[in-house]
Image (tube, rainbow, N blue to C red; front, side, top):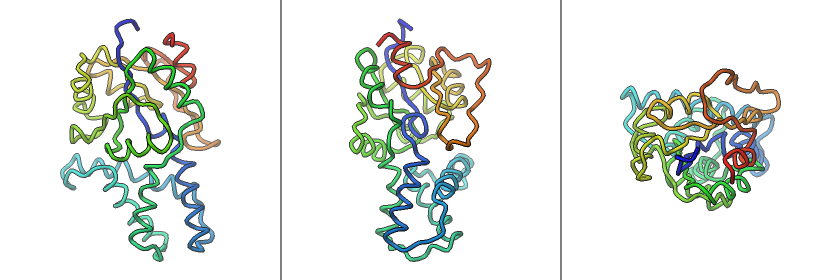
Length: 236
């Protein structure tokens, strides 16, 4: 690990608990607007479920390039129509869409990142747009050295351009950057361009009943239980 100078972090699911955070925002909205009978955890899952298909449409040229805020709003519009929720003003809908800017970090995230940045440059490397990631950090105290986003390459992970652009912007060869993620596909894509890889387990990303990803036999450099464990294993 002596050659690694920077850690690039996936954010949704790896750093922040998107599912519980979105459900909590929905519950607050329901209380304010008198919406009854909604399963807000299922709502969060459905909203997130539109994420990969919408990015795929951009890749295929069916949609023009747009950032994640715009894709999230497009998915939200369809979801609200499907659920028959039609009482929101445009301002309320925009506020709900920006719930992704206010996601809460996992309990170990701030403490672990604080330790990790004593030795490494710490940067986001998320499909989230720069404004989203910046606001999230400001709202929750995430101690990044640098905000990097797929938006800067106008590609989405796991396109190789996202990872190579991040290394270039950090002024480092890819092998001196370690991708940190709770998703094997993200790490495998990073390794394909020469980055190192650290897998951090987030078994609660999809709730207590969710199945943890099977990473048995994956050729990652480090496997960690959380960011504090990652800091221990990297000597921070």
